Image (tube, rainbow, N blue to C red; front, side, top):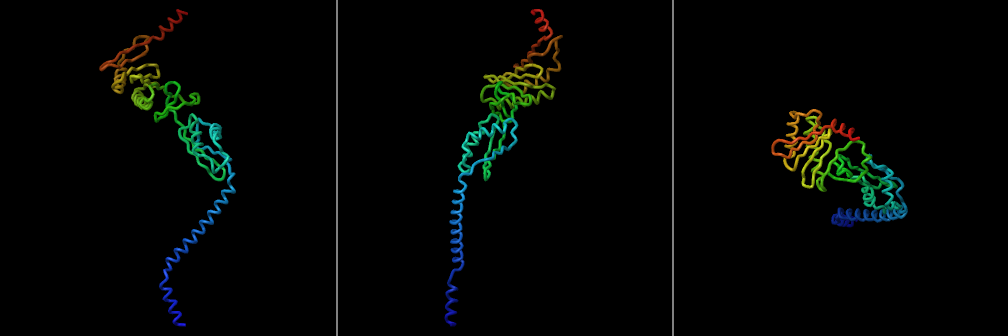
Length: 259
């Protein structure tokens, strides 16, 4: 009996219990994974007819209505929750006029969440397009705007440069109580500015900021003729400037005489 016990101890000492436990644990996990795989398969079969029943619009869009978003989403097949093409939904909503970026995610069991970021218009570009602060143009209904926007004009590709120049000149002029409302950049990259009272500044193509500053410096010393109103200031000179005036009272009187 003692010999048998001693033999068992020898066999036990030769066994690698750590290895045996590791193998046993692996077999157990593998078994659970196989069983879990069958469960997932059965669950998918049972829920294969799951559909999108609820659409949630996030981001609080200002110009894009929920109705427009839903209509865009419904252009995509929503009959299957699992087979729904999220990228197709994203492309469809992205096509709405005011939408800048959009992200889409599915929320089990039947919800589709759409997060929208709209363009923030800062100016009207070439009379019929809108411009955002990044210098990107987009087509949308101007009548939906709730605030006045400056008018900018220029050739294609000059949008960001024009907007940045407008901000620079507006800040310079505002210090002296001038309100810049419009800017135009010609095909030859000559700049013109319009102030709120209708005054036009011709800056030419070079030293734009320097010429604006020249107008600011000279304006207080300008001698305004009787009945005259400043019309155009031509600053396309190395030194000095040329000024033209208009006489509203005389024009009005002339119009009455012709009538």
